[in-house]
View 1: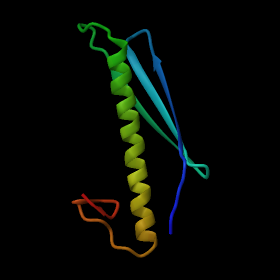
View 2 (view 1 turned 180 degrees about the vertical axis):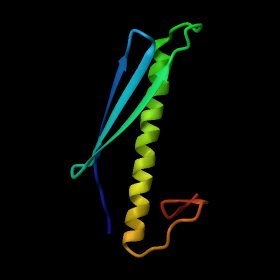
View 3 (view 1 turned 135 degrees about the horizontal axis):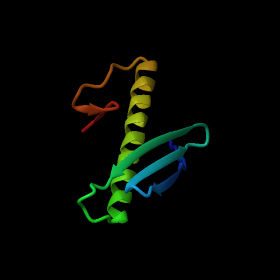
View 4 (view 1 turned 30 degrees about the vertical axis):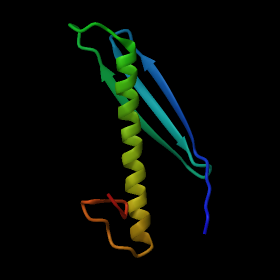
Length: 95
């Protein structure tokens, strides 16, 4: 059965005066919303390059979101009676 869906993602980045960058990502599936968060800190001895903080914080926020999605998928797989994926599989799909 064919299936098409569109999910929307919004990513917000904030940098504090102390060199801390925070990222907040929201995934809207149309029926639910999930959020992921990430931070990055600039070491005081390093040159403050905002783009690097953005990349790190955004990557960590998306990683947080990805892990939540995988956990939900695993629970849903178990909910339909399928065995829990092995450590070499992600949410029931072979690597």
